[in-house]
Length: 157
Image (cartoon, rainbow, N blue to C red; front, side, top):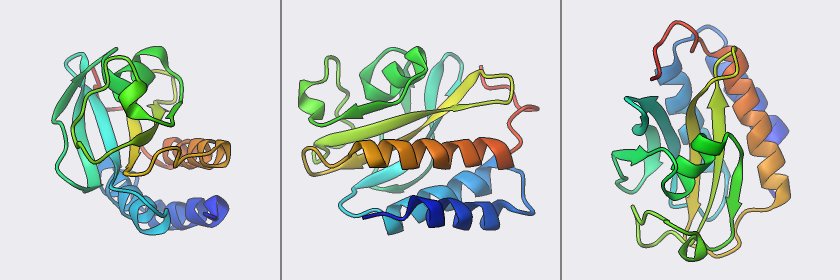
């Protein structure tokens, strides 16, 4: 079982003196990938020109650009809600960036004004990998990222 409280504290410590989002998201993806079991991808997509653009990540190669409303990531960003998908092959419009992925959780990331500027995306090769505990822990981790990172001066359009 993942200690999300400790993971969040570690991220806050790493981001303590650096508000730039690139190193914060880079370290966050590494922390997640190293501390959650049974993953094949953990990373971020950020808004760019009306779509999600690949950001810092750990794992296998990934899709570079995902349209809003498409796949799990684009749907989560477009609807501004966390999506926990037990079987991605049953998700309408699923984009198979990695054929080994079978379950996924995606959490939207916001600027201080509430605008969605990206998502945290985590994939697993196992079906039903993610639980409500994971949802709560990852939503709290994203909240910490939002609190410690300067997204406001950057145009995520």
